[in-house]
Length: 451
Image 1 (tube, rainbow, N blue to C red):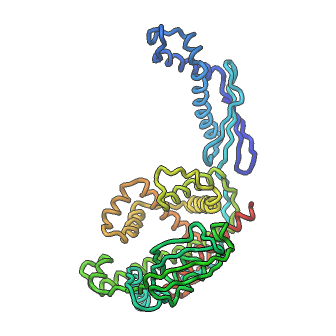
Image 2 (image 1 turned 30 degrees about the vertical axis):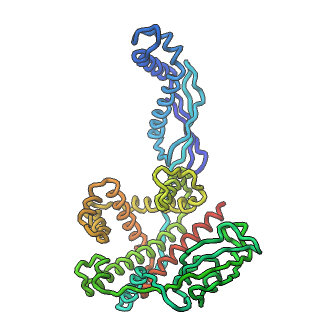
Image 3 (image 1 turned 120 degrees about the horizontal axis):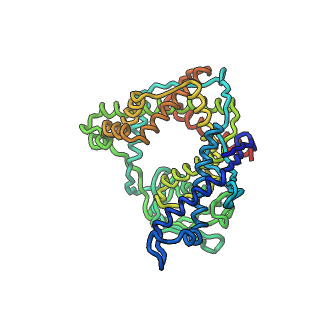
């Protein structure tokens, strides 16, 4: 086997491989012998078909099959001999494929980039610090009450926060438009589910009222024939209902897993959940800042094959999230929706892998189990969840990857200047959300610049 490697770009290689004709012909002859023993042809007993007939009938297909196998085998040998680390699958194309001549083929592949990791030394990173106060717990309990609120009919004018049951029909001029009508629709005023201005004009309405509402559809409205158009809605109000919050009694408390309905245990459980939420939010914000700094300090040429693989994974996640079913063809989802996120994920993954490699990081079974136990605290039977994590290789590897990622981030934080900043519970959550939104926006701008 003769191999030559051409560097066509920073991460692309073009390998030309020659396989001796004798090796190919010998493999084809052996496969034809196997074929002759098992095929059936009218007029011949099985295993007694003349080789000339077998070659004439099956020779082309057998050669194609053998050549395909040989190209794959010699490709693997070639990249092993040349110490190439492919990112994804190659494109393999035969160049010379004739009986009696050396087989020649070309494999084009992307390789993992060589990364000379730059330090994030001197980067300033804010680490939020927050204590959960009694007022925070009270507010969370009010939120939980609101989530379980029920609407009860009232004999008064509708206010923001009330629910109205309405019939409505929309008109452009004097003509009703498709999709602009409904009967018995329940709408919470202030939910901003309808066109801007619609809900506000229902404030003050009572059961039995007829209202005429005029609104203008936003310029970016999804239905193009309505975008920017002024519309009139004729509305019939059937019922006004006010939100009734449940009492924080034993029955309410039991809904959250506190079986004896004890109020002090309930508050302790709420606080523990909030502390876990704050801890996760702080970790996410600090990690995001470290990863942002890592990306800014290091330019990496990202293999398209890895981006394509990540894009496909994101598509499958989206399909599951929206309940599209296991048989949904994810190729129907446009790549453009996921490409930016995929590129960033791959780039971060490559950089973190280099941090892990350079620092010789690893995660022991004890560390993996400890993380599994931490994750399992949110379930009713944590022991069973931990057992499931540790016995399932795929789940266990996912947890191990998360532990290694956190260790890599800790190494980055050792290089940075970490400053603790006091915040309230709400401020911590908002800061984490803003950090993620800023990262998403920067990711989009970076992609636009490259485009």
